[in-house]
View 1 (cartoon, rainbow, N blue to C red):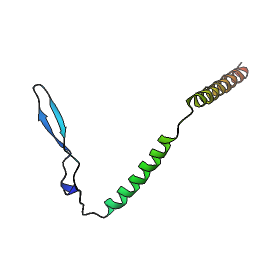
View 2: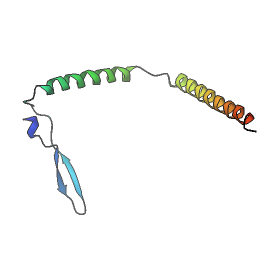
View 3: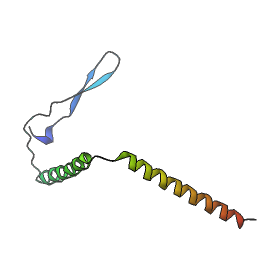
View 4: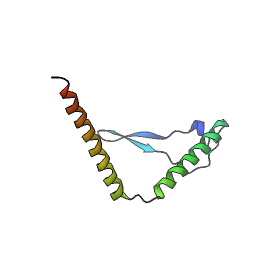
Length: 90
């Protein structure tokens, strides 16, 4: 199937609404533009990197502890700056 002529699906009239019926994509694809090969290669590489990050098991407890400590530290700094700034307003 030529990728330039591909239609993603069709709208089907239901009783009170229309629904989208996707087309099947399990076909042999062809294209005329050689740039598509480069774009597919780049997308494949990015998906591989994303997949690698998904396989690393995160330590959620450590992440939450670090995040709460950083948030408290930032809030504390803002509070002290605000109190320090009030001294010079009066």
